[in-house]
Length: 446
Ligand code: SF4
Ligand code: SF4
Picture 1 (tube, rainbow, N blue to C red):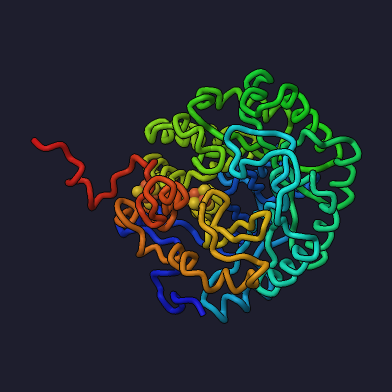
Picture 2 (cartoon, protein in one colour):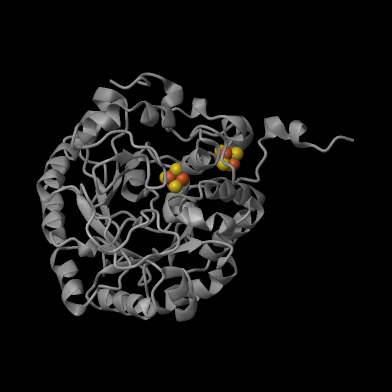
């Protein structure tokens, strides 16, 4: 039984300070379950049903709503009977999205890779049987979206068996891939195995820059070709762009590229310096630039045909509310869609990560193993882990995040706090906001 059962402060209900009462988000738990996504290097948002009459060709919904993107569809991650029973029994929300690194092998050596993956087999990877028995356990508490990631998940020969098994058990598998291995035959397999969306990392709008970042000449062209092939086979595509000082000035060009490819979503990822990304520490945006990128995303989303989702950037949800207030708007579901209902950091709250060897983490960047599915059932780790339970209790946040009016909708990046300070409950080091109750401390002495 979790430590926080019955503790109101421990529940991730979105609630803002009185001062921000006007901007209190509308909470529709079921719609949130429809829509919510987590973070992770190759996280994939909620797939839009291709050809759905209510969906914009670019994946953006019809109607007047300009924020929030993906919409309701038949599948409701974490919306099944098992999840409801689990929450009633434990007081803990079941995971809705699980990113699962089914292999660490990769055909590329990208500079920012969370997994620091390389070509070749890795010791101790979960076997197909171990993956199946973990899925068996997961579905006793939830029916999540499972993001099959890596490494490069298409390098795992039994990937289609994993996909089929997850679907048979009531979960929805999607794939995070670098797309360089997508051929007509692979895309046909994706369609045949009902993969509704893949996410593909593209970080620069030109081949020269992208190839240098990805460590392989020709990679950009293969990735773009893979995206086009997938689209031709009716597989939805989301482009993920990891933003650093090297490409922060290329956002508009990247957006143009994404639109020209006719993809469904454009997700910008803020670098979290773990894995091989540690080598890019000096390429991480300073907090002020970080803020500018998120403000750009807010404004750009208003007219974009694509679904946006700044990821690993929890303070985007603070910025939405600040901007909306300045514009005299309320952050409602009608106006802001899913952005009004989800939260910045979902690690350990409705999202987690399973490594290639079966270690469980709050997310792929959160460098702490909370248990291993070879030794303990997933459901037990999700329920009993002290770290998970502390992440669910916002009253434990420290520093600016602890004092912040926006902590329920933002919470700061816990992985970044851990990486920079060694304390996952410490304040987010890359946020410029000063909570109202701390402003006097930050004022310059007269
Ligand atoms: S201080 Fe923390 S909780 Fe508040 S907006 Fe910044 S990162 Fe989010
Ligand atoms: S800890 Fe950071 S990287 Fe991990 S889920 Fe939260 S915001 Fe994303």
